[in-house]
Image (cartoon, rainbow, N blue to C red; front, side, top):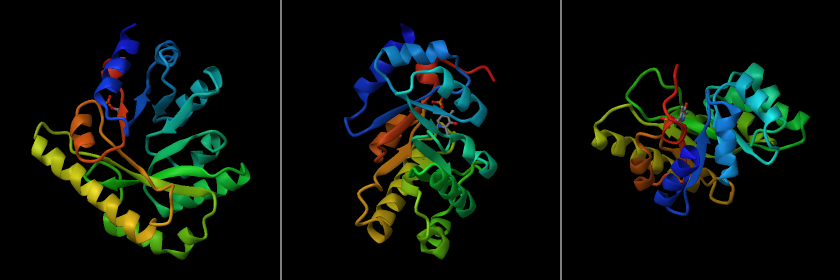
Length: 222
Ligand SMILES: *Cc1c(COP(=O)(O)O)cnc(C)c1O
């Protein structure tokens, strides 16, 4: 019951415009089913192998999001069913997603991951790199990889001012891209930011999709 209660509590705190992705990485099917039976259908995984196994074993109306760093050679496994790929960080990956989308005759929704944190280790593109991708001929020829927004992770810090600053920067980049590249595109609408520790700040700074794991399922042991 705990998991269902956690979900209810978080949903009650989120404004209506914000979608909740329940990050179920490392968690067993029973935990996911508790959330599912409480009416939740959007889950996020960060390992291709785990996602495939859960996709096969769990109800088919679950909306699966891939939230981790994705290697090009693994796109083919998730291309037939994935609903949203959150962390696209290169044109090469986008091209591969397009190719696999074509093979499956389905458009695959993707978010470009932006590097907004101070930490060097986090993946992601700079604003300039995103502009470069969107202006490239390669990008303009893509038909099956569809960019539906941006994703970002803030610095892991207790300094709330810093977190506000990073999420606010992400939102300003989203708005600029919307105006300059996606003005006519009704699909470019998602701003994926905020995790267990910082989702309230992210929502204040314009997030409309939060990715929450430990606050729902408890701490992970890895
Ligand atoms: C694990 C993970 C989350 C969820 O983290 P919590 O702190 O447990 O909420 C969100 N986004 C990404 C990309 C993750 O890898």
